[in-house]
Image (cartoon, rainbow, N blue to C red; front, side, top):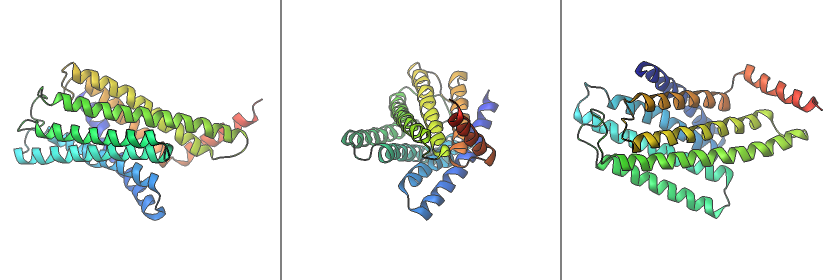
Length: 253
């Protein structure tokens, strides 16, 4: 199980880092905010938070290195979550006052959770099972992540429905419509997996060693790798498949 999780996490880190970097490159050229926020979220999580989390558990690293990795992991994780929250607000509900308030509240809670995790963590993070004083802050962070996943997933469902109606009258791009579908699947699936993680944490399971949380990590990272790849840099074969299915649907009575 541990080897399977390691492979899935490393794959997610490599794929996510590459996709995040490419999206940031697109944002630099186009000056578009959605690409900047999504690229930041994916790159910070895959390129920094995941590798730091893996490295924290290595038995031969020094105490100072472990603490530095913990700070890096928490900062990158919080930055990724902040970017995802801001993307969901600005892309789907830019003029809604409640969305602005929800985004501000989510970011504030995430900052508190990150600060709390670091401030009450043991002297050798990653070297032993999670101590009880850390779990409330971890639960708090999981709650913000799961809420954000659900929000971005449901908003994508709404936009996917709009795009399907446009495609039905010959407007819109099938790949853009499919991108909303993939983002919705990713968000709602990660919400469900996050609820499982929350239950594991409340039950006192070791999130980095117990088989159940490890299986959840494997599922979430594998799903993320697939969705990010297909949504943002899909191969030509996948694009042809989506277009062909759209044409077939338009010809059906």
